[in-house]
Length: 242
Image (cartoon, rainbow, N blue to C red; front, side, top):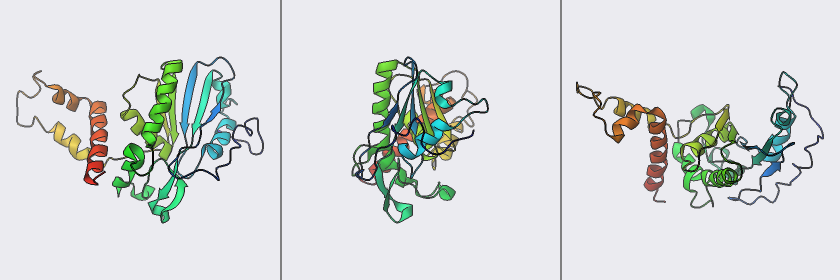
């Protein structure tokens, strides 16, 4: 994909100043209306340290190999660019930055995963959590447009969209798209998966059809991942007394 620089047709939409963004508060989303009748909604999340104002215009001006921009390819789509709340980043000596959750370093993303929990799940001292905020947007859009919704994220935005998907209890929606991302809170997942797969070792009747719900979950990887993610967030929150 190629992109352009300088003023564009979207410049006015993305002109909001971020100077007054308050810690723990989500700035208003930037909404790009569809070019034709509204039939779809894309909810788009930037990476850590970015904002809708920084991320949106280059994405909208990028062209595919066929020369199409995003709104040319999807003229019926309303585009909602979200901005993460501004919070202290541990890796940056606790300076403030826009981030969906606190995080250590990409080269060490399996370390200090407890930092992720507040921003993703509960955020007791930071206001509303990122997942709750995204769920509120999803709920509103599903009520308006049905299931024709795409949740789309880059880097930390991708990671957040995956957790928002796995913890979503509302109506089904069309898709989640991730770019250059990862699944957070995976430290204990391998052990839990292995425990589930080994639960019938030595039992010649273990796969004879006499399964309970937990056993069925062990055969269902998406359901098991969802359960592990929810458990990880709950256990980490309880362990820290929040």
